[in-house]
Length: 373
Image (cartoon, rainbow, N blue to C red; front, side, top):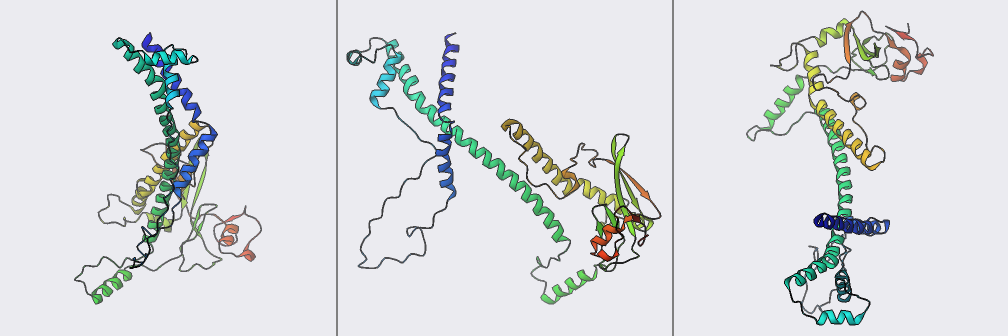
């Protein structure tokens, strides 16, 4: 029972000390420290490499001592008379009577028990509060560090996902002309670059109507065509309580996507299956998994803090609102792949895409397979 009572007293003493350092006044003191750490002062003549070397006859100048910046921890120490009063008060001495204090100071301990009780009282009343104050200050400072680290991790995760998407986009548009073997002469390098460019097929224009998820047929240029057709369109709806997609494609596009894979040695039989797996299980899958983890972490932090969800900009992908629910079926809904004779598309949206206001028919509810319909 004595041990249990002592533990409760220690806990109570620590909680009382913690209250002192969980006030807005002390948070303001620590804020001064963090703001000071973020500021970078200009280089001084002592550390700068651009100083003029001293010459003969240059008088010595006494440097002013640098002012000490506020520290994260503010230690305190009880004065002798205060420490003595606190210790003797816990030992039963009437500290309001100076004569009793003087009598105790002049008396010599007679047993080891008295020495132990004296040391124990000094530890509880003097040493422990001094250390508790440092611990509580450090605890408050660690909360600020934890919040800053979490925020930085969020920003780094977002930056890395954006950077990977930009790198992927750049790789599809750039030809790398570095990394040549040292023995390869300039003429040979030029010949190799010309050969690489000759392997690129004719560039075609690909137009996507994002509002209705419609893919128009490939064209040799990006000009408006009044007889253009659509090659594919994705619909989605609620079927028997389940979110289900319907992908309609024409025969010309089907022949392309069902052609052999683009990579030699690919385990897939078709280009469709190859690119499906690249999208579902490749870099985009990794990015979506990272975003899912970031979202879960933000939700957990919101539950603890009582504040709203601290989550920044999501990835540029449909999965930012439909997070994967299964490792074995990463696509968040079932998809029906249908081949049709013609795909309807919204004529008004296509006119908006090519900025042809004069070609619009006045309603976005009208769909056509070719032309104004």
